[in-house]
Image (cartoon, rainbow over all chains, first blue to last red; front, side, top):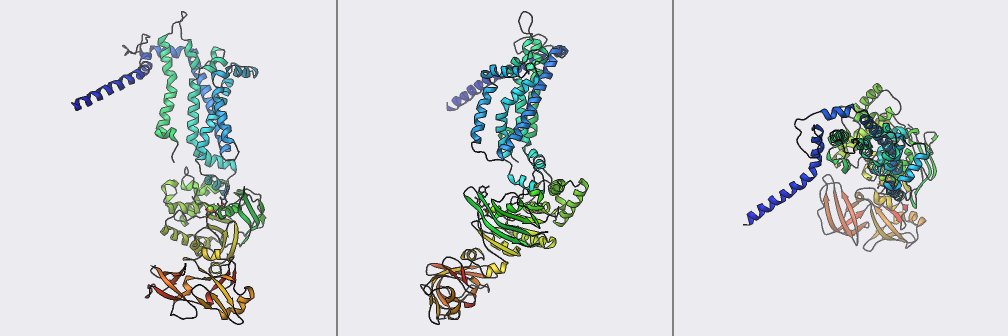
Amino acid sequence: MRLVRLVLARVAFYLFVTLVAAFFALPMLWLVLTPFNPRGTLAAEIPSPATMANFRLVFANAFAMRALLNSAILGIGAMLITTLVATLAAYALSRTDVPGLDFLIYALILFSSVVTGTAAMVPIFLLIFYLGLIDTLLGVILVFTGGLLPTAIFIMRDFVEGIPRSYEESALVSGATPRQMFQDVVAPLVQPGMMVVAIWAFVHVWGAFLIPFILLRSPTSMPASVAIYSFYTEAGTPIITLTSSYALLFALPVLVLYLLVNWRYGFRFFGGIKR
Amino acid sequence: MARIMLENVTRRFGLVIAVDNVSLPIIDGEFFALLGPSGCGKTTTLRLIAGLEVPTAGRVHIGDRDVTGLPPRERDVAMVFQDYALYPHMTILDNVGYPLKVRGVGRREIRERVGEVAGFLQIAELLERRPAQLSGGQQQRAAVARAVVHKPQVFLFDEPLSNLDAKLRLEARGFLKHLQHELGITTVYVTHDQAEALALADRIAIMNQGRIIQVGTPLEVYRRPQTTFVAGFIGNPPMNLVPCRLEVGVDTAHLVGTTFRLDLTSLRDRLALTLRDGEEVILGVRPEHLTFCGQGDSFAIPAETYAIQPLGAECVVILLVDSTTLSVRLFTGEPPQQTGRVWVGVNPERILVYRKSGELVLG
Ligand SMILES: Nc1ncnc2c1ncn2[C@@H]1O[C@H](COP(=O)(O)OP(=O)(O)OP(=O)(O)O)[C@@H](O)[C@H]1O
Ligand SMILES: [Mg+2]
């Protein structure tokens, strides 16, 4: 009797888990299957016959392609500035004793979530407007950089503090100038941290909708995250064939980045790097 | 090659005075050890010479130059850190060649000169490896190689052997001394291991609480420790220090303990010069200057055997005298015949007398 009860409980448990998994897997399945389906549908059905026609349509759409390029410019621009500035700032902050520094950084992080959030949209719009940067990619990059920096500095500081000072001192005594020391010793050692920050910044900017939506006007400067909302018929119904294949293209860079990181650093990536 | 001069150097960290008004002349080409207990300011002194710390007061000279305000790279020194500080992302070749690289030496010449020192230090076949793939002893030699490769004027070592196991440490000791002798580079060596300092150095400075207590050759500091602190720090086992009282008569002198009375009449005039009759003093005597003897000897102290430690070539016997302990070193290696109640004789030629406050007054 007890055995039967045990088996039944097991079966029920797995059924439940399968249901939950299916619930979350379905949208993924849709994302992967629908782009190859000649009929645009909201059901996750196996495409028959599978076709590349949707992709041909997307690739032929100059506006859609331009939007992907814009996304790349925004993502890479914000990534480069954020990573570089955060690394230098984190280094400077961790190697000097400034009283009240921790408090300052926490306060900044707190405010940074406001900066990129909805609440600050009006002041940000005004600021960018008066700077004459409305409808420029640079304006969007700067807003993102400002928003990402405090957290990026916080993450980088952990990595910098993991480097024993004796490495740097040894370089200085060996005859290195402070710049040589930073280039030859510090930078290679904080590289894993820079990777973390870079990818985190890129993914964040790549998927963001609100800020580019508000700060960019002309269709030629829209990034993909905004452009995807324009695949509608005149009647206002979404063109699912186009949207789905574009969504898959849009998801690919992020997927590739995560796979790359996983291949290079394994699962320890976000748990702090062990040397 | 250069001499080093510290002139009234002080370094404060907030309220802590890590180095307190230290003046040290270190002679060109000598092997100089800084010895002292943990936290006494040895590392800070070394870092002041390297330029990694700036003195709060005082001047630092290397050679004929005042380097007090100069950054490390303009001092032409090399330092071996306690953790070796080999860069984990570089091969041993790049590590050892780094001082040359930052001086703008070409790739080809770096390879050549690194090969030279690597051969000398027996790490030639490890050059393509990373530091993590080396044993402790090999890492230590790689760190030394990086220090010698650009032929600095001054060598600085901060406890370079403390991460090695006992056997390797002895090996490395011989190797370092030989190396310094070959190169003749002025060397400052920080250690808290008195045996290491005695074995390696031409001269030793003993530090305590940021001050230099005594400077001298290993024999000088061993034979005539200027304070009871030095006496208790140097030697293994350290010097026996027995509190007692001085009795000076018209032409007699005795050191009186609770259970003994040593006749020091031969030293009466020298004792009477600096000490008063009835003054509390401390008797210092090295374990090897104590011998077992018969009762009633005028230099004998009654004692109780407490522990016997045979060490092969010698034998250390710990005795209880009243409430203090005395160590006796016997060079025969044979443990003593008698145990229990024994008498130990003191060689009056070899005794030191300290004031209660710790300074040496006789010896
Ligand atoms: N950067 C610093 N900030 C504050 N205090 C310091 C600093 N460096 C050293 N000190 C203090 O100065 C004193 C001397 O330190 P130092 O490192 O020179 O000692 P040490 O003799 O090398 O000891 P050890 O044998 O433990 O290495 C210690 O009390 C230490 O706490
Ligand atoms: Mg130290």
